[in-house]
Every structure is written in structure tokens, then in C-alpha cells.
Length: 103
Image 1 (tube, one colour):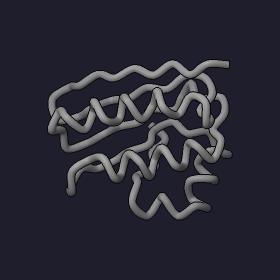
Image 2 (cartoon, rainbow, N blue to C red):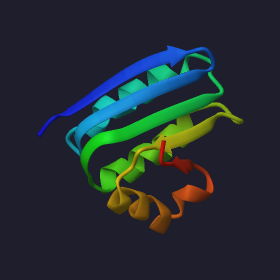
Image 3 (cartoon, rainbow, N blue to C red):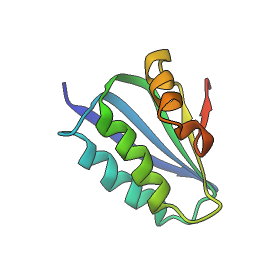
Image 4 (cartoon, rainbow, N blue to C red):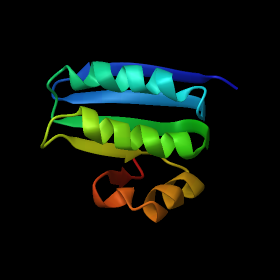
């Protein structure tokens, strides 16, 4: 399945919504969107995963990429991750620098 990625900006929050499967083949689409989000000067980048059905290790690399692209002080918030995806993020230790939220 493909990955659908959308970006919207509301004030100081850039919202990236994902639907489908995030893997090595689709990660470049997310990277392009993260780069666009980073140029808006927002204080929060919210990545919504409610409709994400699968995340490979490339998804973890994408979260690290997001950390590298945003300015210091910008909060990256991952919202709506399924329990397996959230567990993978926590196991990798990314929850120390990325905020995980249910909603």
C-alpha cells in the first residue's frame, strides 16, 4: 500500500498526517514533507499516525530525520500511534526527545 502524506499549518503548529504504510520505499515522501514543515518557523511539528497501518524501521529513521531538520526548541509530537508503533518508538529511545500522545 502507498503512503499518503499531507501538511497543514495552523499558527505555530505544523501538522503532518500519514495514512498507509511507512517503509523504505515511502519514507522519502515523508522526508520532503518534514523539510517543508521545517521552513514554516513553527514551534511544534505534530505527526499524526491515526491512519498509519504499518511502520518499518525506515519510520524510525524518518523521526530522527525530523529531529535533525527542525530548529532547536521545536517540539516534535507523534499523535495517534498504534500500540506496536508506539512501543517501537519507546524501545528505540526516541520517546526521550519526541513527545508521544494518544490524541
